[in-house]
Image (cartoon, rainbow, N blue to C red; front, side, top):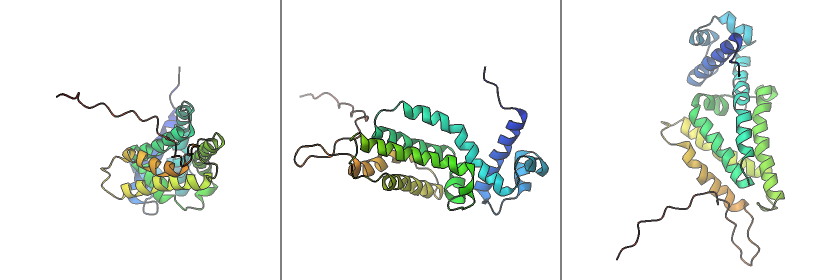
Length: 224
């Protein structure tokens, strides 16, 4: 039997959720501990029992979020064969996460981006683990001959995640009606076109990386 969170854990999650909403809606500098306390229905003193400062509270949000989803994401990725397919799954998970949790996306991509103090935290280390998984997947694809041997894992990862960040930030600043997940395959097609190894015949074409895609359904039967 799986036990639920303790009272202290539940209260901490309640404060983190309130802080996430408040920071995303008002910005970090404009938000106050008093507003977060009101949103989370606790006293300001209670917040300081869990977090040493407003900045410490901010830095705890990505740490808690990443710990919550990390194991499940790793489990799903282990079930996927092939580096290209696994890269697609990773990009899907990022875009799906940002779309389902836009307040967290604001904090991660807008508020914390470039924050040097955040780079010293456990939350940043956990976020970096996700980037390292992308690098390992690319290195695996190169080692197994799925990707071109001249591919630079750091550059490829930067291109992929740069595209993910760019479309997500534009989405955050828009009316957010576009389905971010619809952009998974356009991003992958663009990058994989230059990454997938070509066949060995003279003038060979790049091997297909998207064999996972279902074939187009057949059209209506031809009638005379």
